[in-house]
Image (cartoon, rainbow, N blue to C red; front, side, top):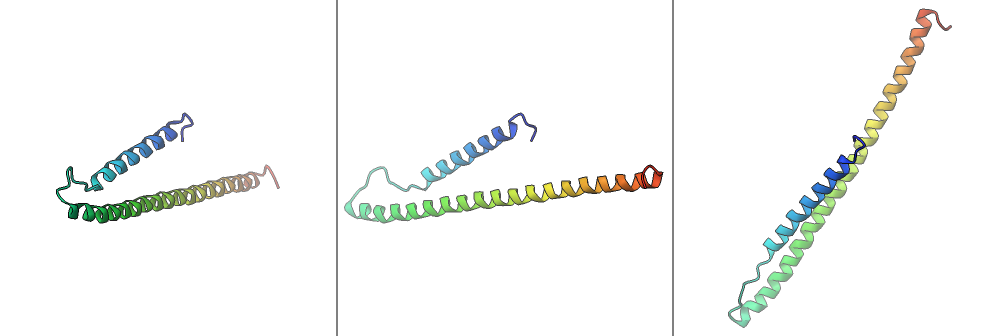
Length: 107
């Protein structure tokens, strides 16, 4: 990152975007009629609402798993990148030593 906090700001905006979309999906999943007409619809609404609750729970669980998987993969990528940079640094210093020997600056 650049060190000016723009990465954190971007992550915050992304999190807010995901939360707002998920809240819109939650409200879209509710199937409550504006006025029930008889008692049979209220009993079917009860089973429908429990089904909606289960769907909501599974959706939240799926989002949580995706977020955790993304975080894990990001950390693995960071570790691999750090190891590659360290290997390049070591290789750079090894080449310097060979160059000094070739120029006769060191035995």
